[in-house]
Image (tube, rainbow, N blue to C red; front, side, top):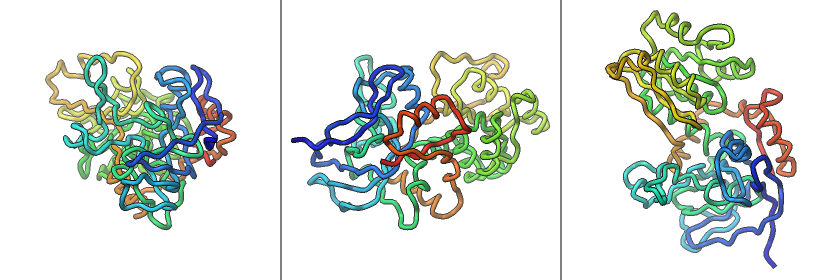
Length: 358
């Protein structure tokens, strides 16, 4: 008889439930992880609300920390019992996109041409990490050993939000001495703020109104926080920069309003680095875009994955140069995950990230 595990399953819009599921078989290139810690992402809330379609019965979640339970026969360089993480984006390592240096876009061909987000498999196209066990495909491309001395909670942000937020800073090509504005200080925006500091920005202006997030933004690297409930952020940022504008503006919310404000605070020749997930068409304002003559760049990023990316992120944590563990504001067991979703989806009790432990 097949062995069973507990897993959080998408049933229908508005319902993710904890239920029993068969522990998956391990193929030649796979690894089975016993999950020790995972978390809930804003994308999971989009899935819960039916705003992002996934198959009925899919296990959700894409941020795994765990221990190797079983290795496929072709997997070399790892051992059972080893502590590892895998990125939310788990590239194959041999697709056209991977070999072109774009592992996140490990593109699946769809019926209407190429489909972006192809590298995002956990909790999207295959079963995810909000369960007792997770099957990791292409294990040799994706499993990253956790250094001794780092706890689960210290590395929990690496698989997704740290990689995504840092990518926003990297894609924006922040230079030493730059002035950067980061619009919204949710988990992704906070990681973008931390990434901007690591990249060498010397003035980081965060835009946020929630008191807990304002404090956390200062903790991870913001020099100034503009409360958009108290002042117009565009006017205030232009005042702070003496009319010059910022070198890089990072959009970390996914709204037309913040996208537009990012354009409006850019210097001529500045870069808008977009991290938000947009649910409707964007409009580029004529004035903010300088009629197309402002030498601006608009760049987008999808969370880079793979074991080398994970290794680098864990190096940043091990060095002590960044500490994202304080972003974990709540802790629940897997048995309480439905309650955890309620809290996270409704942004109650100052929640930022929730550690889920089977």
